[in-house]
View 1: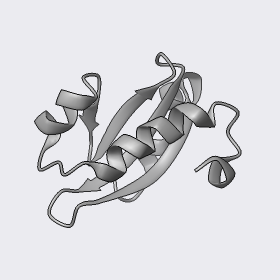
View 2: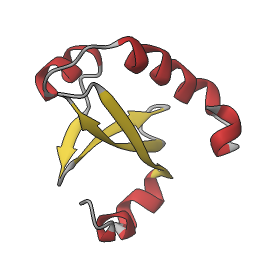
View 3: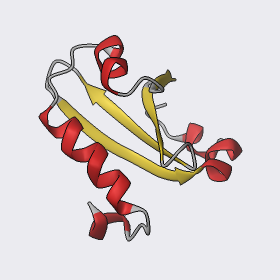
View 4: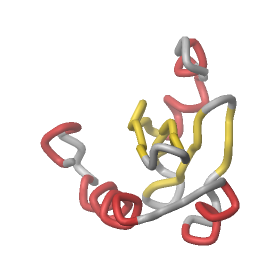
Length: 89
């Protein structure tokens, strides 16, 4: 994960990845049992990383048990909402 994003706080993302890759979630409520601040925005699920300094935006296929990482943004980048132009939003 670290190399994919070259992110200086990649350890936090790695921690999320370790938990998420072993999860067997079937809905957002189950996600929120592990990550209480996770929320659905459009067709994406948004996670707060590093005390809300970063936002991890993913698409979760609950039936296929797949997670697609769409964006890793600073809080300021997230607030600009450019990511909402994604055709999958």
